[in-house]
Image (tube, rainbow, N blue to C red; front, side, top):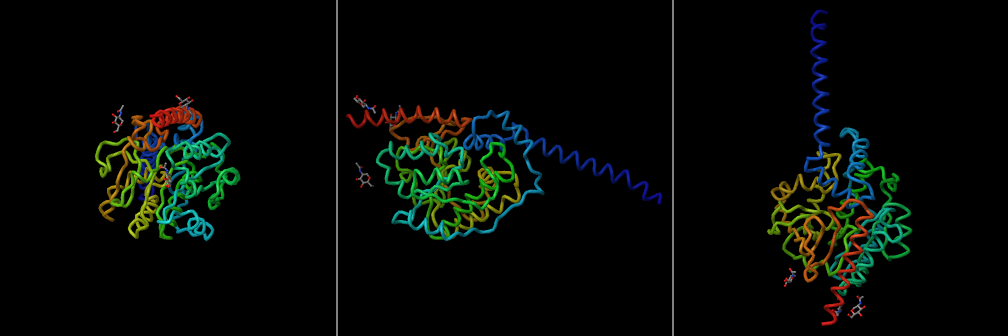
Amino acid sequence: MSIEKRKTPIFHYGITIFLAALLFVCVFSLDSKNPLDRLRRDWLGAKGVGTTIEEKEKINTKDLVPPQVVRITTTDFHDDNFVMMIQKAAMDDKRVILTDVNEAFAAPNSMLDLFLESFHNGDNITHLLDHLIIVAMDQKAFEKCKSVHHYCYLHEDIGTDLRSENVYMSEAYIDLVWTKVRLWQLILEQGYSFLFTDVDVMWFRDPFRHISVYPDLTIGTDRFFGNPEDHNNDPNTGIVFAKPTRKNIEVLKYWREARQRFPTEHEQTVYYQIKYELSSKFDLKVQYVSTEYWGNFCQLQKNFTKLSSFHPCCLIGLEKKIAQIKIITDEWKMYKNQTNQS
Ligand SMILES: *[C@@H]1O[C@H](CO)[C@@H](O)[C@H](O)[C@H]1NC(C)=O
Ligand SMILES: *[C@@H]1O[C@H](CO)[C@@H](O)[C@H](O)[C@H]1NC(C)=O
Ligand SMILES: *[C@@H]1O[C@H](CO)[C@@H](O)[C@H](O)[C@H]1NC(C)=O
């Protein structure tokens, strides 16, 4: 009995220390000086609607799910309808272009319209739209897609309503972000390569002019420091090209499984965590594309002689992004007009 009594307080201290440690870890992971948080904000900015960082962080804190509760699906995915669409949309060398939208980004005069328009304003790239599959993440986005584009795929697997603005960093939202990697894997498994582009990337020139046969993966950057093979470039998985190799399929599986270790993170943050592992385990060759070619606001260098696309990263809020995209589009049109004149 007396031993029992002496043990109990120690046991309680143990629990208290454990809880304190847990709290410390939670608080630390929400610290905005944490580099992961910058990524998270950029991502939210990329997909986000007009809220400030502060508002977003309030939402994040509230909606963050404790790791042990997160349901992680790493099962492989197959849908014959999607496979048929890949076959129809592919170029004759089995390349497809892929993007995804939710209701907010598909709304009239929003990103989807600007995205499609950019191909029409671009330098002879309208034909690329024949090879574009738009993945709709909810019914409204799907309806909108069908009214403006040929290849629209409704990805219903999540079963949660993701139209609400309040789901950032919630389990369902993170699931949504990860479903795109499942779709990438399925495309490779069918023997097709894909270029994934976020729907807020505006294309001026053919994206493939900056993709070579050498690397396994080609990835965009927030900031580029000169060496295309250096993982220290800030990768941005908003633009990704992958060849249909066995290695790449294994890499995507590994990437998806790594989510177990970082349950509340989206795919780009997990990529940051595992990029060196991928290189050593799979001998993965990645080429990062300079922001001179795939431009953005993180490292702004707007030389239209070189620019192939523009991605409004490092700018928070859907309305702000749209306004800036319109300015850049007008500048591009002026540039094109001038060069056509001469
Ligand atoms: C535009 O692209 C198409 C398809 O690649 C090509 O056949 C055509 O010659 C191009 N036109 C110009 C003006 O470059
Ligand atoms: C833009 O890029 C072209 C081609 O490399 C170069 O000749 C030109 O000097 C650049 N313009 C500016 C303003 O840097
Ligand atoms: C293109 O340039 C011509 C001549 O400078 C001008 O009249 C026309 O409005 C311009 N078009 C656009 C779309 O800027």
